[in-house]
Image (cartoon, rainbow, N blue to C red; front, side, top):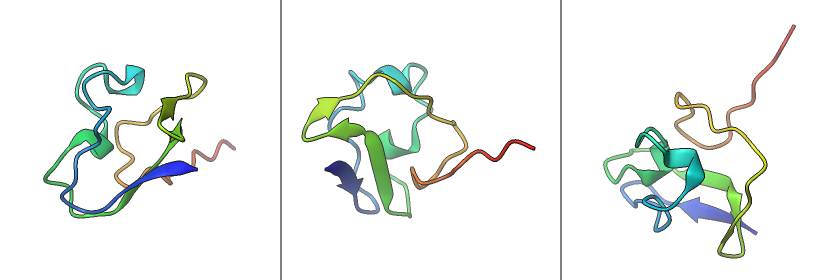
Length: 66
């Protein structure tokens, strides 16, 4: 199950997550107004096989390539 963070709740993995290398992940920000769903943390384990867009404020943003 993915990690669901309610607004104003910072990710508990924010300091050790490889997707937050320059503190750009919105899930790690405590002042976020939106709910954030992180698919890179499953059952408390960081899954290292993806890319986090620094502009993604909800964790649900999809990149569409044409």
